[in-house]
Length: 533
Image (cartoon, rainbow, N blue to C red; front, side, top):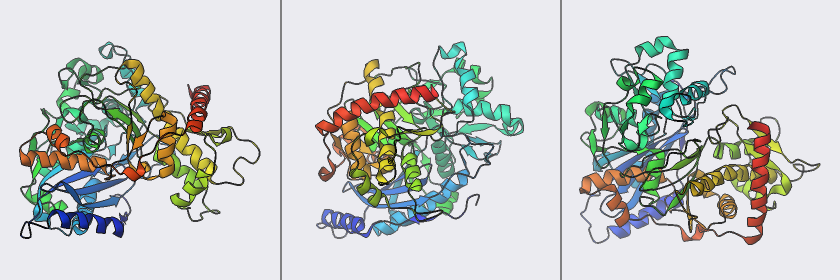
């Protein structure tokens, strides 16, 4: 294994007991019934999550997670972010074991599988469909120079490609590793690679393919002129088949079953990128619902019947996974910024990290706006705005700013990451993509923090609600997989089986904080532009 042995995240017994109680109640009148499960897999940057969705009672039966990390890189490559794709297969196998245990179920009860994958990543395969080199991930910005070059070509009509987009990574491979490029016969995205490993079918779909940077959203096919502008051979490297929504890619093969533990013959749906799957999980399959995701990346997106091409590149031109569009803002720095602040607060040299709970309590005592202290969160550069060479910065320090309360930096990190997401809503409103929504749906790991939920509500000046099931991407993949078993469309299935929201976590803006954050956002933009624009 390329990485050191990662640990498997354990699940809270309380959550396990509550889920089992729901399952027991749902099946109380059908004692001899054997559950059928749709398995949703979310193959992410930091972990793979597996979720088992009971097709007949429409409840989440079990969840498992398996953590891993990026491959270590030399200091000479600070903008690199790579993973061994085989790590993702480990993630599926181990997270499935945990989910089956959590559900008290057998693998044979899984009838379908859906895959959500981190977007933009480049997996290079040789003529025998073997991985040539580690995958370059969405957060890898080594291809910033190639992205800028591509953007200058007339075929892109002024659209500013960012280093996150896969096409720029292909050119980087050609320029920096010509030997590996010569061996490359196929380029696919992480979720397409997982589907291939499960079914032996190499295909893609519009939701994830629109993150390549050469996808025509109007025809939902590859743009031949853009492909040729990137590299004359690019079109021949991409998956030949672009599958429609609600299709079945294939079935789990014997080899895949032995590798992962999934049952032979289980149907595999098209799946999609993680944001498109999160939209399904959050119920955002029709215009009107706006979702904010607080994960490794921060995203803001909502379903749309039409696409808008933002030439500045702030709003990414994506398709969704149900046949429509998903205009989206993505930032590279979200929960990682909070983790950085947490690390700063560790006790002594190499001391133990304080818990998020204790830091959250400390940060709650800090006034909104942190008395002018701001964490500009661009730790690994940034894609929105397109500042690949930016860095993190703390501004506004005065004597004593950090001396007596470790929560100041922790709160400033949350506020900085949230300010970058507000930019997306303002840009979407300028483009006419959305009006100001009545509420936001908040998902991702950061949504578990009550303090962060309040900050989002105050910064956006919009009420926030949170789904009861926090793994929205895995849930979306599972619901898509359930729909193909039931012979309905994913959109119809989601509209019939809407997500359940946790009313105890619904958060409304507080009047005093809203004004403070309005001024804070303007100051944040000025400071960021002065340093990095």
